[in-house]
View 1 (cartoon, rainbow, N blue to C red):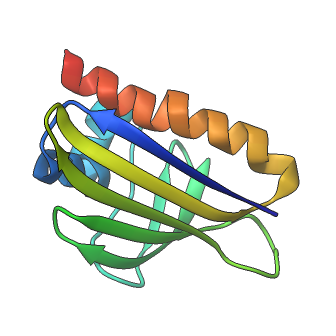
View 2 (cartoon, helix red, strand yellow; view 1 turned 180 degrees about the vertical axis):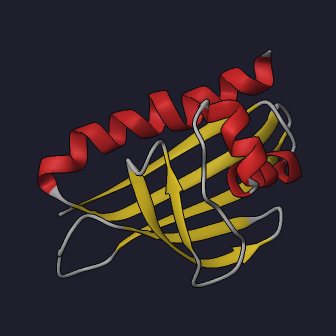
Length: 126
């Protein structure tokens, strides 16, 4: 299993980015797919027609999202931590994704940059 850490600059405020990542209506707008999401710790979530699914762990409004992403029956939990920092161009997003299965690593890391944060940046540039 591998870990992945990367920073992204999103051209929107931390509060806007937080809402875009946690509100199912806004998620649908920038992903183009139905989304199941709640800011209730312990709730399940699903994005991109169940391509991404897991459990929400903790939230700090406008600042931080922590989730467990499901990858079958792996022994260690795969944890995603998204931390939002104000930036002169909008928001600096600090992504840390732990315990990504080796077989999924390339697809997941590419997906973070193209489909996930790439699509979110495109959404705010329109």
